[in-house]
Image (cartoon, rainbow, N blue to C red; front, side):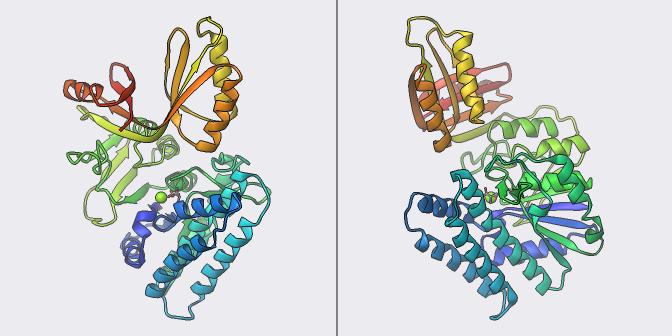
Length: 414
Ligand code: ASP
Ligand code: MG
């Protein structure tokens, strides 16, 4: 059996849904499970709605915009009176109810933001049925069990795999359509797996069902050695070893979610990255292989925050200071992207998740003089050559630089 994953860009309008349906229709004789993300930029819109509501502001006009967007897609795909209209309306009701719910910031976030995937999967499911395919809609929350770490739910693999394996009889006769990105706690709260987490969902289903492959359908021709929107000379890899792909995602290549590779590599399940606009293109195959002479790989990671902790008592940075910093980081579940030590200060950069990073800074201020800059970009050049090394080191606006034998990283203000 195979797993397909379609992201928001492939489902951004009615033509997108039709194109996805045609790829599904042509998938061949294998059993198939399809994971879908929220349509277009719905997740961003839902984040905005959540943050307005939480801060006591009126979110109704944003909800109307999101509803109109989906209604437009529905109108082009279904006749008036089709049952899908009621299904989508019920989800919008659910959204309004959840916005009024009580709970922590992140907990409500997950109840709200997950609705994008619910809507999109319902629309795709009904469309597949309408063109005569045997689609079975699955609520991913009934299978993917996580802890209560809202917005970054950690999967309980044993429980999750058992529930997914129980789907095998359904797959005999149906194509399963389900949501990426979402799971559920044991007491029934929706959780999300981290932004862009639908790829990871696809890997969870594939690993539990020991699929023969996973295909992620993207708007790029495959995995490239740089983001083509930033470097027009970027080229597509025909194949990549799991290890190389995993490292790329670690540095922030957003073509695949970082957690996707491990479950697939552990089971030897190849991951194909293909273009939904032109499915005839070969794409990239990520699997166990050896590839020599990989070109330099350039990854831009935006929205970085550089924090410097300066000791205040004329001593030097000691292990004790470091342990205060790392304890604070780990208690907030924050990950450092680059770090650097000097005599009297320790600097590190991390993704600027405002809510968490500001509480981190507050904690650190109890012990250090803290300086920070936001809006930075971390550029990583993996497998650099002489030319790329010099080019990125001398980039304008470098705040921090670090290199090893194979990798150069510079933190810049673009
Ligand atoms: N819809 C979610 C997001 O935009 C998950 C995903 O796209 O993978 O982050
Ligand atoms: Mg997405």
